[in-house]
Image (cartoon, rainbow, N blue to C red):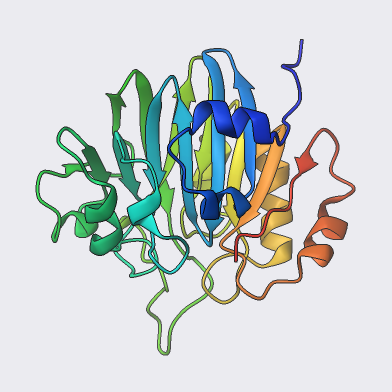
Length: 247
């Protein structure tokens, strides 16, 4: 039986994030039911997310351009997908870091951060009772001048977070890579669509067809026409596409 549907709820935000500054209430929040309890996801912008589960705060790719991190709840766990400045912002991380904050990063992103736990593609580790799988994230088509991919294979991570049997996939900066076929049972997927750095709409549709998540959030969207994304994915059975202001 499918879990109760995703919803956006101001009351849930008040209950789950009591210390959130009033200015941040303008950021959209969705609450997702998982087999291990509710996860509140705050969409801070671009690829910056904040998850609250079981009283624990998880920040993903915090970037000061998207939010005032001094006013946000301190992190119990920070996940950084890769070293680019819009994903690795040491100032934002320091603003939400407290004693005991766990940092989990790719190898290259760990360089400016003290005490970071490095996960390479294929590694798994449990943090705060959440299993975190590091999975590949890279370009195979889109290149910088010459033949250098925007995101070379093996350097960046996507993350699959397991809340009980519920899996939330935050893909990082990637295209529709073959390794996605091995990610079985994804319930919620955050997939980037922002040329030339990540996926085209056709790539996004292919990735969704492979992953078949129950809920899809296009993110890291830049100047992508989100109405066109919604229309492009409308025919995919069993997938709810949720558009949030995540440029």
